Image (cartoon, rainbow, N blue to C red; front, side):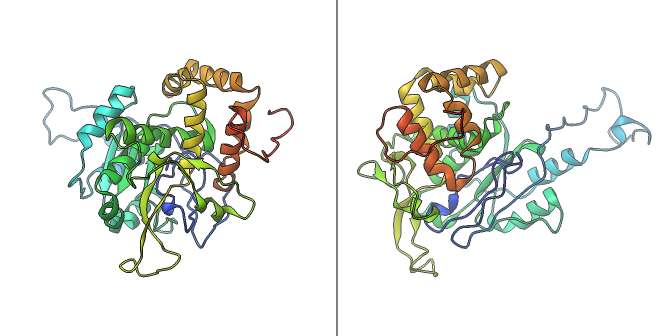
Length: 348
């Protein structure tokens, strides 16, 4: 989840949309599907710097004058410090491996905290006030206004997939945290989950995913978006073991089955684009750092098909549209997906 981007929605069959992101780029709300809840946070602002270090020779107990710029800590810095000071749980995680992987890719390092689910209410109050809405199923978020990634432990899914489940979620949120230029909800979530997929394959050595899939498969859970949703082949690296909440309300009695996060649909689209133009992978990472990199991404995606970037940037940012965004990409790269939705005039 990327706190700058699309409004979150929950669905019953898609792993609780565990790898979903940013909530404040002004995209229209997504209707709740399958009894889920949405979440909106405050508009993103540039992260504020920490206050200046204490001058050499100045006693630590001295106080700055009331009119001094150092007399007050900005609200965002205070919130960042308070969240960073909450009790963290990193037991079993391989965060050194995560940091080494994102570092090799050249992604900016971001403060990341790993918290128990019981602290969700505390975090929501710190970020938005006591009446702020927040989702019980929210797995993690990059909160741009405090430049911090927040990841919640999930004992149920960790028991099914191992602690690597949280490592992968951490990679996803850190990918969001590297953002400099906005690419819209679909491309942004797609990038973050594409990076997570690379971590699963390249770093963990699990091309069949945490769910140990025998092959890529059509994700039937996309039906949660409606009868007209296309069924598309999703790479096996995105699948995790989840619980069948449709049949069992009691998690202890629920059966385990493979499923994906909704953001993996967008991740599969980025995979297809990079497969078509391998140089796009490096350009996507450079776009996190510079406007020149973003322009190269635009040019390369449009070279695959004229107007494709604009269509993906603006037309498929609601979660319910993600299958159609993937379908559009598969058609553009020649994957022969039928019944492609026609984008807005002039976009494709």
